[in-house]
Length: 441
Image (cartoon, rainbow, N blue to C red; front, side):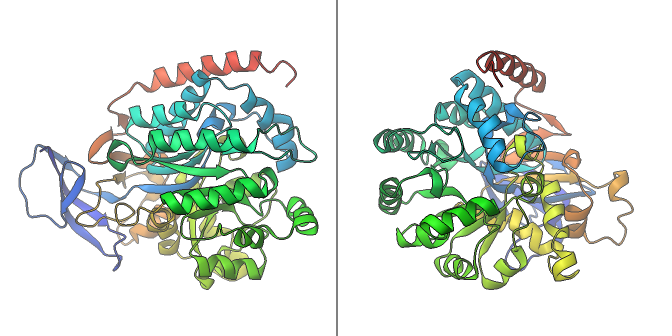
């Protein structure tokens, strides 16, 4: 068995007691064996003196296939963003361009300390995203977008209910719970306006039978939410009527939910994915996260897609999640510890892996990140609260080391298993070819 000793770090455990301590972590293969550890030797020793050591971040709403489109859909609301940019670009994807986009996404996520992501891909070629996650050692819950309803006012092109289901079932059988549990599948109806009753009902039935996660969008844009409420009812009430709510459901955004919908989400154990950067950039609004947390809703965080963000930086999302609610709810409404919980243990709970990841505890998988403290923007640190530093001061480039399943993927800020330049060059090349397939963009 291979072993790693992380020595003399400041351990931000995020365990039930939220302990912060100075000490060592001993790892064998993919799991934490001792914390704090008294071991003196291991196959590999990592010196963490002066560094913050914490569980890897868990983002619960990301689109890997969209990172290729970064900077191509700026300054639009969500309807034009979809109609004029995202639908045409996603339709032009090939397996090669999805693979290149996913590799670029995953490299950025790992470089910024994210070790797990729940992602919604496009209608086609989702196996290429799984291939990238597999090869790069990333922990991912990936789903093929499911759309069998035409969306009024957009150029969304879906497919039949039968085809949408058959694609997802094939991917589920092929990838779910593979690579030792590092890869999982999620059903991803794109939204209530994109999926028929029949599709939703089948997703609910199969997900219950096979213990599969469900990942969708809801209540993101005020005008769309009001239109849907007028013609079809409030989205979460609608999903509840079809048996979709539960601990296996993650809804992205949840900005325009009603009090009744909040109560339904809390009672069912469903998760809301808070995406502050994307919500700001698309002018969608601000989700009332303090109220959701007060009601007992599990709220986690996601960067969403690069075309509406424009990056996948967990630190930026945490800082915004902490700041944007304070003018309305008060300076103590979103303390740093609560925000870090949203990015770690709440995210792990959202994807059904709270017993495996999200905190530094004996028996859990060794998904661990280390942050360099002696940087100008996080100094001095003599009397600083390290959790506050993580949320308010640190940046993605402060991530020094990343382990997933005990595999060191980043060390001293450098990737250990792949060439970043190759990823950059390949993504640029694939984007050039993709744009030739969208002449009227």
